[in-house]
Image (tube, rainbow, N blue to C red; front, side, top):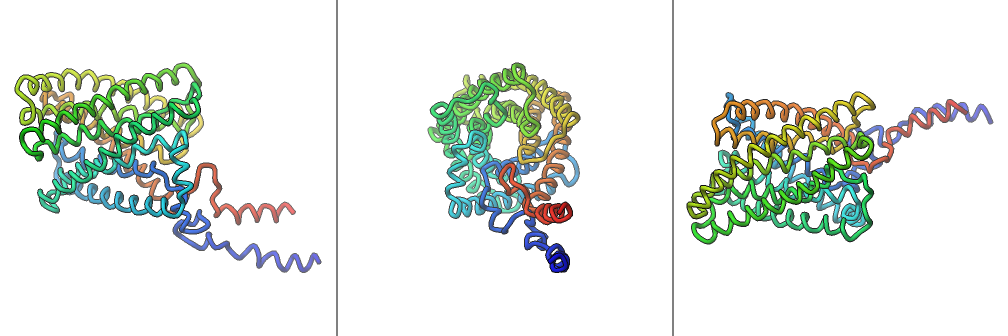
Length: 404
């Protein structure tokens, strides 16, 4: 009996499992499992990639080849958006129960704000950069379609997610985290990105309605964001340090701050063609005063978020997950906010701040993008939290055999 076992063991241990023979998605039982747990948080990768292109399009200092490189990045973001939309459609078609469970999950549900922002980010990039490829008329049409779709979905997220939080199980005192901002930021993105489309709206009532709608969405997002930022700050000072996996979401606070500075500046630029003179001039003043004050607080939060991130990384490590995309889009909004302030004031302070923040953005995007690509190719990022990779199975079996 022992001889038979000894002879059979080599053949069993030497035969690799089916997943280990695959080079792609080898951490999954089957490649089809990549669609099983695909959440809306994946669209943050489109946001983070798109903002790299959009921020470069208007950076105060120009560098050789920058616009061409930004156009390539915009094209990559657009292709990534198409791929994720298709994958998410498969997810909803084949794994409807999992898809519905995301809406009830206290963390994943917050990221329903990511798809509308991804749509509008790519739409704005199409108008800023894609027009060189597909022509202005086509770029305007694409931007309108993506902006309108993103705005509707974003307003729905801004209402539905907080409503579920209010009417469902009460949150714990230490539950507030940066992800709570995700569903309320899309209207601010609509306000900022809508400013690009105001000149393409029909003169008169249509254009007036457009800028008033953008200003209203600016208010929706700004006030809601300030309420949530207060809760996040209260959680930080009244409770133990957040878990390492949620620390990158602290950077999301920069999103509504930087985007509000951007929106105020862009709407002020568009106001003369849409609002009567006194109000258009008032927006010019507001864009500067509000923008500089909010930019200052954004820089303070950037320092706090960076310090907490470094401390966490040094103390216990910073495990990689998709929340790392919080290091990209929010920083990108600070780049665009600095850019509009530089254009409005001509101050070297904002010019060099925009450049320095853009360097930080590109570095963060490169690191997060590479790690995301690696995790996606292996299939690790398609597993639900806490689930073991199937490639670990042969190692566990060998350990069991060695112990026996």
